[in-house]
Image (tube, rainbow, N blue to C red; front, side, top):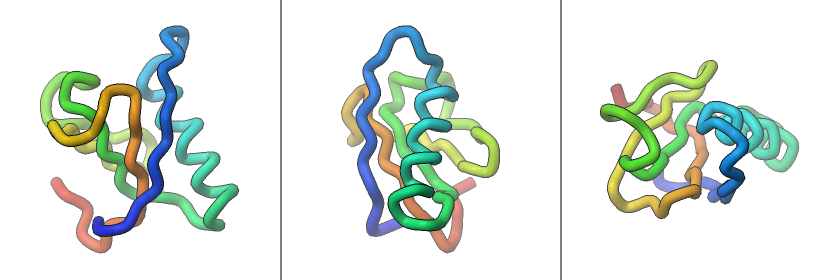
Length: 78
């Protein structure tokens, strides 16, 4: 994924899954399609990532905490 859209959510009352679902819905409203990839800070999740619905969540060190980089990847990382 080379181009994406950044979402910020630091609400302590929401789980990471809820935050991603809200970001996905806003992305859909804004761009008219669903993202298939979301990059998050590696400290936000256990392991390398997980799936949240149809979105592959990838943990990386270069995304700030509470930020979610969403977009469409032709080849979703495994």
